[in-house]
Length: 264
Image 1 (spheres, rainbow, N blue to C red):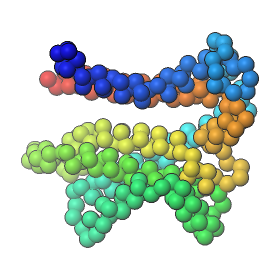
Image 2 (cartoon, rainbow, N blue to C red; image 1 turned 120 degrees about the vertical axis):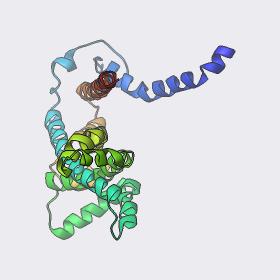
Image 3 (cartoon, rainbow, N blue to C red; image 1 turned 180 degrees about the vertical axis):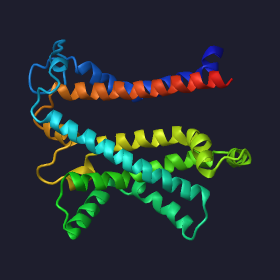
């Protein structure tokens, strides 16, 4: 009883992690399944067919490539813009700063159905044809808020005395930023970029409103394929994305741990 009382928090934490990871584990397991029919919902037979031919489903790899391209470009643009906005909101006082801080949260709080339909109305009014460009603009818009919030939290935790110390050592503002501030803010920027990419790659609702008739991203492909039986290759792509995300986090943790040991 005493052991359970001492380790209760750890046990609950492990149960929560297991609950979160359960869908991912199912995806990994069923990527090795050979379904008897169209639907990959019941385990039938172990097979590597889907792994040996990940592009076996027509149109899937094209949709995946489009989602990756939009996700990378949207993440890069929103990260640059969001980082500059985060520094401006954290370090400088200007008229309308409080209102701007409030407006940053609006895209995060707005339902995606409302945002998608509003953006579609805007694009139609501007005469823009729905397609890759409108999807990219929409993804930059709603990922920008997440980047600003993530980077701003990191900037707010910095000690201004570090930059003042760099200035006392005759560092120029540019040198102080790149050699002191940026390395300290880099983890927050990287987290914001990864979050922006994940949100862009995963989005279906806003994308569906602004994709047009011929543009199909990976989430749209999966939704359409699920109506007639999603191919096993979808689970393969999901497994690769999941393992890749875990690998990136693991490498970042290893680098951070090694750096802390060196500094110590």
